[in-house]
Length: 251
Image (tube, rainbow, N blue to C red):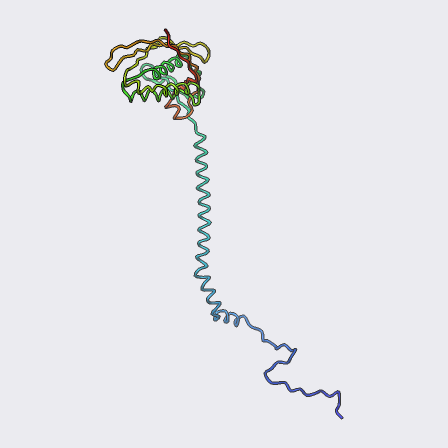
């Protein structure tokens, strides 16, 4: 009779681990791991890729950042220059000289003084001459028309009236048949902004023969606006403008 408590003999094939028993693995040393990393072809390929192309990617990223910073710096400089240029203003420097030419007084003209009536009278005389004179020289005539329009404010009644007059009767075509000279009679102030002017117009043909002499009277509304830009200084340095006008022929 077999002893039930006796251990049974179990044959285990050599080289095969027992079921449910984990094989014992020897620990890997640091030197062995380093040797394996150095000899692994996949790791060698990854290291070669990083060394060859990773540097290019990093450099490209750095250059992009530098380009963005440079663009921001350039844009800031441009905006700063635009702001500074928009803040500039023209300040005239006045120097008074005597008869010999020596300087007597000098200083900055910080505040514009009220325009004298003599200056307004002079400007209105030029205005009427540029408006009504018909010279034989077309270049001179064109220059007079440009100076005339420099004294007309934009969208003013005077500008609209002169445009209608020139569209109905071109002064350049009229100058091809006869010439007109203007002789001022009087320019007097009526109120603070309204002036009255009288003048004579002498008409002659192309041979210089006298055709007729006509007398005119006009009422002009004047506004004074000192120039603030270089373009306004070159076009209308006195700052005298004719905003409205009405004229009639005297019998």
